[in-house]
Image (spheres, one colour):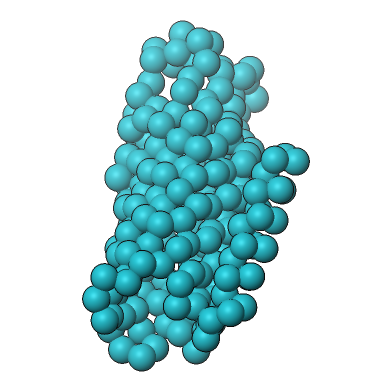
Length: 200
């Protein structure tokens, strides 16, 4: 966690120092997208549940999120919360991300910018399968994002982006009143999203 804390501090300091020199504005946004996860399984889970397809549990499932931050002419920094859940073959998982992000902005037209940046924060993975005891775990998340930002009016912009995260969140599966059947580890998460942002 020391590395994560140092990375978050570096993102915040870099973003703050860059934006302090620009005519920056606050913004809030609503995001919608699709998330697909890569999940590894323990040998015990494969044996006891006959090799379930864990990667298919959250696979292109709808993802909603909220964000808030500050943006200047050359960069922006912001916090994002998003939530996605999915089920497959009797397994249901929910993933929640709380991220701090920093993006560099590159103008390509008068109202269009490309962006590329880094994100770090926390991921909560919850196992909510019917017939199993609910289990949750919080792990780190670190990754990168890129996309295009289109200014629609003086206060409104639309954004199309892609984010990739590495994480170590995990969860266990145990029937109600039974013994643990094994565990799943969320190794990576990929999200394509559209965001509507309002500056004030």
